[in-house]
Structures are given as C-alpha cells and as structure tokens.
Amino acid sequence: MELTFSPTEFAKSKVLAVQEYSLLAWQSIANIFRHPRYIADTLQQADIIGFGSLPIVLAACFFTGAALALNSAASLSRFGAINVIGQLVSVGIVRELGPVLAGLVVAGRNSSGMASELGSMIVTEQIDAMRALGTDPTKKLVTPRVISTVIMLFFLTILGDFMGLLGGGAVASGLLGLDYNAYWSSAWQTLVFSDVFMGLTKPLVFGFIVATIGCYFGLSAKGGTQGVGRATTEAVVAAMILIIVIDVFVTRFLMLVLHSY
Amino acid sequence: MPSSTQPLENAGTILDSPQDAIVFEDVRLSFESNLVLDGVSFSLARGETKAIFGVSGTGKSTILKLAMGLLKPDSGRIFVLGSEVTAMKEEELFALRRKLGMVFQESALFDSLTVEENVAFRLMEEHVPYEEIHQRVLEVLRFVELEHTVNLFPSELSGGMRRRVAIARAIITQPEVLLYDSPTGGLDPVTSTTIVELLVKQRDVYKTSALLVTHRLQDAFIMATHAFNSAANKMEPLPPGMHRNLHTNFIVLKDAKIIFRGNAAELVHSDNEYIREYLSQ
Image 1 (cartoon, rainbow over the protein chains, first blue to last red):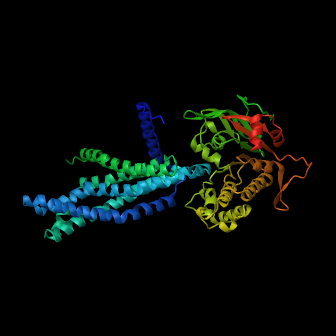
Image 2: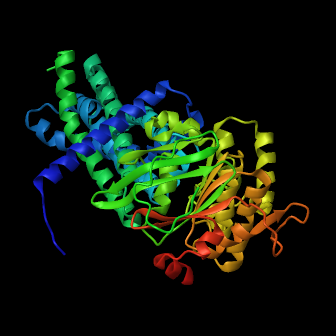
C-alpha cells in the first residue's frame, strides 16, 4: 500500500473542517430564530445533560475545593495568613475552577455521548432518512443540544461553585480548625461583581463548545462503527482542549472588559 | 422512450414536462477520483415504476440520493415534480421532500423510537392531532401487515419487518414519488416476495411513481408481470396472452453510464452481451 502525505491536502482538510464546524455552529444559533422549534427535544436533552451530569459535577467541584483549601493552607500558614483561605478558595473556584471543571466534566460525558449518538445515526443513514422525511437535522438534533448544554452548564456551574466552597469549608473547619462561619463570611465577602460575572460567562462559552464540537464530530463520522468510535474520542479531546485554551482568552478578554486585574 | 442496448453516452437533454415525476439531464458525479455517474439522462413518468439494475458500485443508490437532493451532482440538472433540485437550497428541499418517500437499503429506522413513532415521524413534525396520527399509523401498518408491531422498537423486528416498517413510514403521507433502495436486499425469497407484493400494491392501488434500485432481477420481473387484485387483496400474474401496461420499465447501469432502457420484453431480448450475461446470472 502506498503511503503518501501531502501537506497541501492536509492543510486543505483542516481548513475545510474549520469551515464546516463554523457553519454548523452558526446554523445552531440561527435555528433558534427559525421554525420549527423543538421544545420537547430541548427539555429531554436538558434532562440528559443537566441532571445526568449533576452528581459528577458536584463531586468533582467538592473535592477540588477541598484539595484547593488543603494546598493553599500549606502556603498560607507560612505567612500566618491561613485566615484568608476562604477568600482564596472562593475566588479560585468561582472565577476559574468551577466553570472549567464543570465544562470538562460535561465535555467528557456529553461531547462523547452526542458524537456517538449522531455518529451512529450517520452511519446507519438515519440522518439521511430524517432529511428525506423533510426534517432538518440541525434544527431537530443540533440546536436543542446546544441550547440545553449552554443553559444546563450555567446552572451546573453555580451548583458546582457552591459545592467547591463547601469542600473548602469542610477542610478549613474539619482539618485546619478554622471557624466555619468566618470561612463562609470571608469567602462570600471577597467576591465582587467581576468575579461572579466572569465565572458565569465562561460556562455559556464552554457549553456552546461542548455541544457544537460533539455534534460536529458526530455528524462528520465516516467508516462504520470504527468511525463512530474515532469521532467520539476526537470530540472529547477537541472539546477539552478547546475549553482549556479558550478559557485563557475569555479570561483575558473579560479582565480587560471588567478592568479586573 | 426508445429502448437501446448500446451505451447511451451523452444521451441528450430530456426536457422536463408536466408528465414527468423525475428527470435527470446529463448528470455527472465523482467521489474524489472515482467517477460514479457519467452523463446519466432519463425520465420517470408520473405513475411509472422504473427499476434500476447494475452491479455494486455502479451508482444506483446514488441516483436515488440525487433525486432526493441528499447529494449534489458535479454537473447536470435534476428535476423532481417540476422543481429543479440541483438549483434548490437545503431549506427549499425540505418542503419538496415532503412530497417524496424513500425506503433506505438498511431501512434506516430511528432506533430510539417505536414503530409507531417511526411511521408517524412526518405527521408528528406536521403537528397532526394524536388521534389522527394513531389512526393513520394503524391503517398504514395494516397495509404492510404489521399492525401488531406498533409498540415495538426496530431492534425487536426481523430484517423483513424492518423493511416493511420503512415502507409504511415512506407511504404514510401518500407521496407522489417513491424511491426504493434495494428493498429486498439480504432478505429470504418468501419475505422478498411479500415486499414486492407491497410495491405492486402501492403501484396499482395508489398509482405512485417509483424508482426501484435492486440487484434482484426476479423482483423487477415480478413487478413487470404481476398486477394487484384489490378484490382478492393479493398480487396475481397477468393471464397468458393478456397485454396490460403495468408502467414498469428498466434501466441498466454499467461503468457509470446507462447502457439499456426499455421494458421487460426488450430487456429479455436484448442482444447486448453484458446484459445477456447479467440476465443469465
């Protein structure tokens, strides 16, 4: 078998993939303003994505909050500043770790689910059958997933933030012997508008990435069950990497906009 | 349309007319370097059934997907029910597709939906009241003799049953044109005959235009020699010596081109070597 690598073809395929992804992402938004709207499908997806991911998001955030408190305590005690642990945990969780962790957990669970579900539908011609029946798959399958992921990730992040603070509080009072009320008081009072705004803007972006990447890789699946497996893996990897990379840019952008250096 | 046993290269433009359900004009399509259709032209009259033969990879299924607008040709024009699908946007195609029905090779039933939800898919999209949907689903499932499967999932059905459910899904809105992609492929002879009987019933009872892609010559010949007897509710062969136009014709594809078009008698008496070999297998 002849193996040849053409940099031009490789570059073209990547540009084409970006173009197709951008079109799908654009359509998923534009469909919100077009008929028909699939409310029942959106609610069903919200249940699968939101409630299905709830336990693991809560657990991940709780233990990350606890670990953050433990690690911070070691450094803060050197400077005799262990009392500010509540501030450190709350800013870290609300601005950064809560949204990113919730995004990564939902990406791992739902990008793969969307890619495998839509990929299976592609390889078994169910998507073609849907088009042949006069239904637009981007309206019926993609837009409900995008809307529900964006909305549910927003609320999952709020709950995740709370659990992260709870985890930090458990360590602060249980292991470090700090006053529980003082921890909560300092954690609460240190938060300002820009922290909360930044922490709640990110899940909207991450939710959009998770859903559109999952749907894009699913709808691009080729080559039978092996292709579906490949699409699933690629979707999870791409969604996670994008969340981590985009997080830097969103953070920088919001810092500039909110003047919160 | 004249029959021919010679390769019909550049067979000329066939103008769309109100009598035609589907018209292909000099259609070419390649997948990367693989030429799938090369200057394919034919028309399907209203009420006609056209069986498309050819070995695997000759572009038979591709013709159906092109007609449905699921694929776009590299060049050439395709008209369906008077609309030029090659010039339509995807959004416009959805409205046209609602007048067509397609049965896919592997049925392509939605595996997370029940038989009733699969068959009723288009009606649910049109927000038809549930009572009416249920009644029409039962009616069409009775037509394919699968009324008892209404609450089952596709995974609980046999291959033949899935194919019949796919036919039910395609015909529930009584489309003007039906596209069958190997509806008997991979099925045993008895089940195949049941499926062919359904196609004959649809043709003779509802006078639907149809493109039928098949590997099985016998299925198409049964369609060309049998008619549906509504009184007896079964398919019957035409009596010997009786000549009745069953509006069933044939196309043979070879190397991305049409090499034959005509009726059953013309196909059987073709002197084309390839066709004679194809028929003898």
